[in-house]
Length: 471
Ligand code: PLP
Image (cartoon, rainbow, N blue to C red; front, side, top):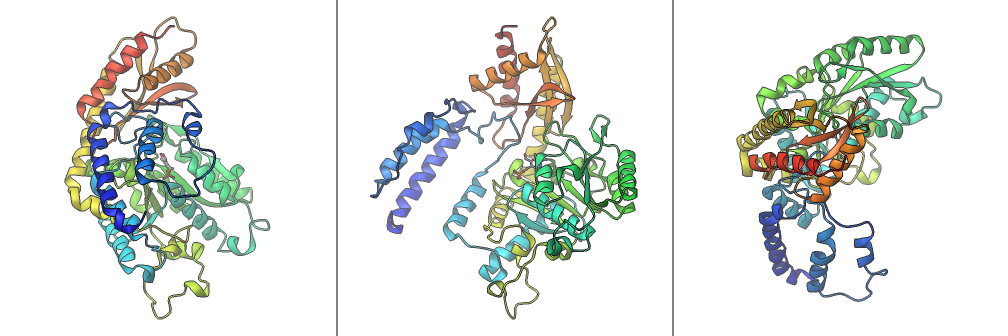
């Protein structure tokens, strides 16, 4: 395929996409294929000669589409969402066409400067004070890894990268068990070791870190000869939305001069609405914060917004400047690859720019407020339904519940069968979690096209499928 054939195919793809989005609610949300079905429909070896694009497109429809789980479906209530709003999809198309590498200012000044401006817009939108600088990372995992490396280096007086960790005091990092597994991974990759990720017990309805226990753990580690480096707090944890008291955690961090990273990958989106900001009160005292616009406001995957207090500490940890990357005579410009783990960087700022301009913050705020309100209504309705119980109340638009009819020995197994039955049915898509060891069904509202009817329909589906289960 050549560029002179591109426009008709581009038009065809755009028409396909529009039809897809306008009719997607008729499809089952979770793919209904069996393992191996797609693999077996694909030839064992690649073609040596070009194939007709018509045939490629046809196979996309016939082989690939049946194996797709529809993340853009309005009744996608599983995990957190992966929202792709039309304006940001258009930007993604432009990004793919330009395919710039925005690793250095000079490799695309517009990409760098748009990133600086749009992230400052987002800082203002979230109500964060001046003094936070933004950078777009590939993922929240990447942002957290950058934060963990920075806290490690800062605590080791910048010796870790140069000398390796073997001869240095073991670094300690503190978090509850409610944080996302990307924190565990960052600790592994940073060479800190899982044994040095100190788990702090949680308390209260929000399952927040017990800050007295946090303070005691840090003190005990200092006495034992460890090197405390940082604390990772969460706002809106993945399981049930656990949230630390950021003001209290930051006071402990300050007392011990530790780095504080806040993972608000999902809940951070809601902070464009001022009424939710009490949920992360004290965040202005964090050293870094991450949130994923694709999880709710709709600047689609990939791209995570990472706010940091000290670009100097971050670049001191991550920047490498071999001769071929030096931009002589261009001091004072930002080279964002020095702020990230990977050197190569996509032009992700464009989709956030298209998103914010095409919808405006007010429409995004309305969507979030609606989702939270509908989620609370559904939670209350499920809680009032005989044989159902709330497990965790709504945190923003996320809650959990379970089916608990009397006389059943293994409620965990029954609820697993309920989740499987719901997802095989296909009208809605849900996933499970565990709360204090017991199986619970998670429900979150966050897809951009979801309506109140979609959310309320979930009640019918859940109760119908539950009724049909053998006990
Ligand atoms: N943090 C939280 C709270 C999450 O829910 C997730 C993913 O769901 C992540 C981090 C990891 O995000 P990413 O896939 O962008 O690395």
